[in-house]
Image 1: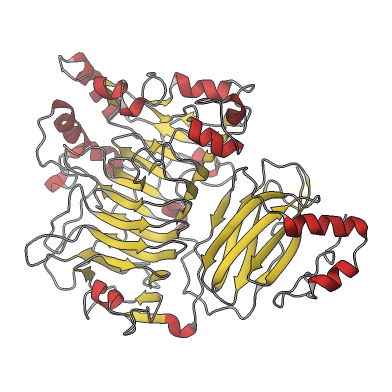
Image 2: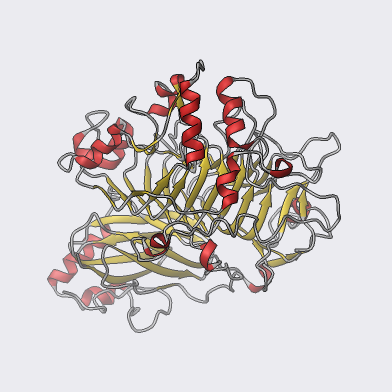
Length: 617
């Protein structure tokens, strides 16, 4: 095998492992075998069509003078950020540091950006309390519907350490149309870390673009509910093609809690999602299915708690329609369907034989491990009484996996990549206020309660009822801010001791925040790097995934590829995407490749660097 000196490219300073001389000198030092390998690598003109499993970490770097400190006592947040431009319309700053916690920031209009942006809150160092942003009430008594819009291709947007409240200053909610973030562009990288999304009754994040990446970590989505004639919305992440035909690069949702979210944790059915990870999350009281996401090509659903999830089940109409996917075998938390012909063709890299193409199905990888699911007796007893009564609209209650989904995992010949283990139906032992949230509670703290809202929806008699957990009520004081810590903090700290070490990694099943607090508060964005550099993968050797860091001293189009020892492209990690100067981290999963030595190259303009890594299975 070759050592680290077998590639010598032009590039920036990067220590001992990457040398820099011209490609001509490099060729003169290689023997024929090495020259042939190098030529194949440099002239590779096709992209691998296998799955790209990339997670772009929510780390952006900016120049020291690129940060603007914003106080809540000044102009509204939209005026500050939208007005922060030169006379030519160029943004002056890309990082907005929110430091006020004693009152809320308000916005009168959508904050739209066509440049990279980070909105970074400074938590209270003692309590962790976050800066809060909420809608104003406009002169016509309307409420602005969308908080942030990222409008453009190849952009990066990051939200860190914020409390995004969809309830206006007059305690009114924009039911059915309130949305925190809109992504409108291709190859956009969006990250949210340590962000509370509350009462965005349409979507927390919606996207209309291809090949976008989403990384949401340590976030809390609470009371994203709506009125009883809109029970499909209240969604964490929504592909806005609505049949999901936008192609999505990667989605990672990790260490998050969804408490009373009416709709989906992710809705992206139909268009290919190259990589999906949903791990260490609490999903508590969703009305509809948490995943409208049945045609996965590479996914992990590990170490989550699903408590009273999909509580609305399916009625007779839904059973044969939109929610049933491929087979009418009833609602379930995990639901899988056959790939459509378009997705199969993308996965194969050539035309498919149609829906359920066996060659494409063989390539799919779906892991479902060490999850907990449970429906409390207050809900199951209600179902029994409901279906025993002469209702016109009885319901099919939810399973962990319906029979059509279970068939994927049972057939290792057709679906060798489908693996499930360690999933159990057990009560996590949440506190009394969680189990009590089925009902209105004291002072209607939970609105109509889930069961009251269920009745309003399923009988078609509802008007303006809402439900949730300890619904936030906006106060009139100039120094008002939502309760902190979050009201659910104590009762989501469950008592089932076996679950505290039951994850695949030996840690806590579900969101570890309720036990350990936040272990990774997003730090302030750092200054710009001085060089073009590519770090050694870590870990290295690895099985089956590793991390790759690189730095860009200047903005420009970036390409990163992985090659085998024959010089063949086996993965395209970044495909000629425009990236700002900064520091980036990729998480690369190579579980679909064989053991051996691989090389990864970073290219930007005339700069090119290469490193070696080893996959050991």
